[in-house]
Image (cartoon, rainbow over all chains, first blue to last red; front, side, top):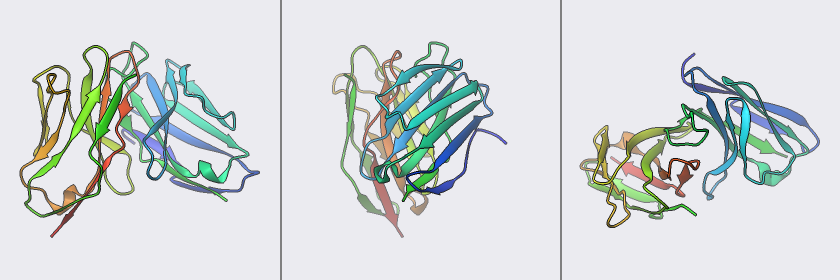
Length: 116
Length: 111
């Protein structure tokens, strides 16, 4: 595997379910990101991790819970979601020693989430 | 705060037409500028970048020049192909902030 991979690619869940999205990067980067992409809205940065430490949380509801066990893996745990949370969730990574995005980001293919 | 404004889409062109997608920005300091492309069913891919004024980024026939005086980074291609159909995102970082993206411009190229 190369680049940034995400699983699952598609997920349908009910509002009472608990599920997790997984992201893995094979690029040796030390910063990872979660984005939400909704129809007709700009990309929304959700979380930033640098060297496994969370450095950014853009007022994301607590029903989204990130986890970064090491610099190659990133999870997004989901529980009691709402239908408006249906979107494409994108993971990205970058080589960013400053903890910010001065370097280009490499994106995974995304997980298409539908909340019913 | 920093922001990026790109032209509204969708843009529909015939094959071999000239493409321009406008992008202007507001930023503190001297940002780095990027164009990303998102093909159907995929994540975003870096298309090109420029890190200082008057730099020209280029890739796959696409070009964009960092214009500090007009705070612009317009994307151009001389002859588009059907395979260029995608959503294009302009983005910036001031080096100590996460990437800021524009809303994206959908391009459809018809044969």
